[in-house]
Image 1 (tube, rainbow, N blue to C red):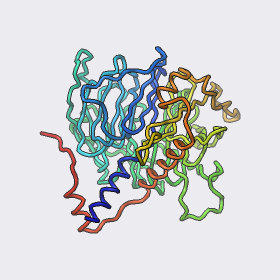
Image 2: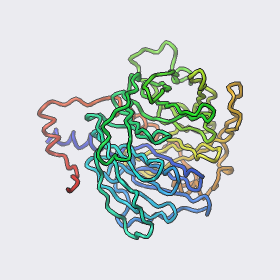
Image 3: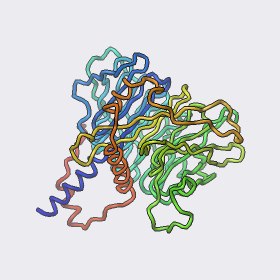
Length: 432
């Protein structure tokens, strides 16, 4: 009985602690925030909250990943309720519903809007063919997911398609980044591994890309629990440069002991002008901007943008591809059923110019609430209320620590305990 109680509390802790997420439409028509099971969307064109239509009632548990497609026509969400939902952004109807065998940890949409991939907590990656989408379908269509690759029971923390759509890139808890060829025959599986990007010494938490029209190529950047951002040639797996952010952001002493817990890199996001990648770091009140020198293939820190006047540590960051703003959110589903359980704080950074030279320091700054696109109606819709108290910030900070700790520390079980946990599992199985 005692073991059962312990197991229940562990599952409850893992399920409830979910950092808030943010996603921005490519043309900044919509901004979406997910907090716990609550999915919020604001229509910047109409200046009001979008009304989501889902006959099944929406997500029932914490949402772990949200994405707009490259075209902006579709939006996907997935999480702990083992469901992936696909939304039409014109009507905000749920048009596809996909059942996963395990909890969903990450999502990605192919550049042509024909495929959705998602990863589950056991390290498997699935693909869903949505090339037959018909906007006239009024009810959600149930889709079957096809497994295409596996990380052998390692939790996949992030999925992304390469900018040219040739590869699906997956990062995991066991320090690995896997680059796999993604063909048009993907429903038959993705069996050809291009390479592994190996070098991180803790879990890989996030991925992004530096793109250059001048050099006609893109490079991969990854963030990790080892407090570094690394630059990769993802076609060969070559590590090009490593940038230690903890010390440079003033979060670590240069003589900090190796066994001390490092501030994890929480999220990465390419800015709209493609000259910078923003990094959110555990304990950093703001973001760090990184620049890539394509000719030298190096990373440098361009600027630290601090948030003054409040304790704001972003849990997720996002940007449109055509508007020079970076959106940030701080929040989390609470460990207890308090009023702050579904609160979030949204901030915006401006000042991303067109001069990409290394000698130019970005004039980026956090703008005031009254200057944010959408103003008070947006903040009311996405935050839950206009004014957010310190309790919500503390909850979010604690949630990030817990989420990072869950990734950092692998639970060790005896054979007897493992059997007990297996008997108590209630995984949904896809029907043949």
